View (tube, rainbow, N blue to C red):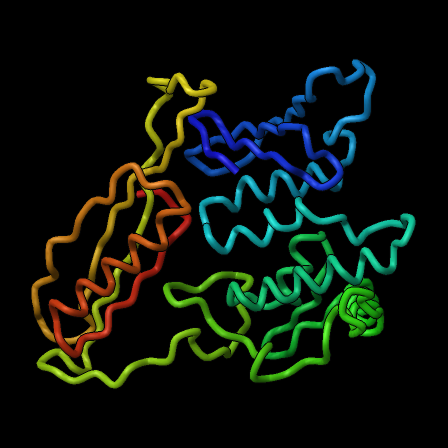
Length: 287
């Protein structure tokens, strides 16, 4: 996936390995517009296109709009490389079991709730009520049962093993709340014991995006220009009247680089203020 001045470029979609898909984006709101499919050389004019599949187009748009959340957005990107579990197809149960198990395990590694992630990616309705456990769609339950019961011929074991709390238990992503994260989950990285003059204090960082630059200069390479909106960082101490340090403006960062750079800043500030806990939340709004 590439981010360009005008949108998102996707390649290697399942079933369409030689096609390129371009999605127009409004970078001010990070919303997807038109989707175009560019065929490989020699394709018949009346050939079927990826854009003929409305369910695939929906996931393509979701992938483009979620690109600001990288690397957690890769759950949508992963779905484009796999056959959809929807519908009937030859060897459908095995393909569905394989797809579901891959998406389930990948969501766990990303610190997401597999139930919430798979419902969101494949357009299933998750029934939720305040202070009650979310009820999964019956289609999700059927897919999960098939993944638990279908044997992978390569391993001789089910595609998705039975739930194991130590392996599959929910974990929060280290630097911010995400709507697909599990509720009441411990952090992915246990909190260290903090000692030093700033012990017991927390510096909270809020990271927001600036509007992307206007289309001005295009790179010669394939006419693409990889972009990344600048990030504005604001800080606030939870206790005391300590002056907030001067925080940098992170310039020209792609979404894929955002998490790494913010984590690096968090580590730098914790070394500068021994004992302090530094947290960071990357918001979807623009500064």
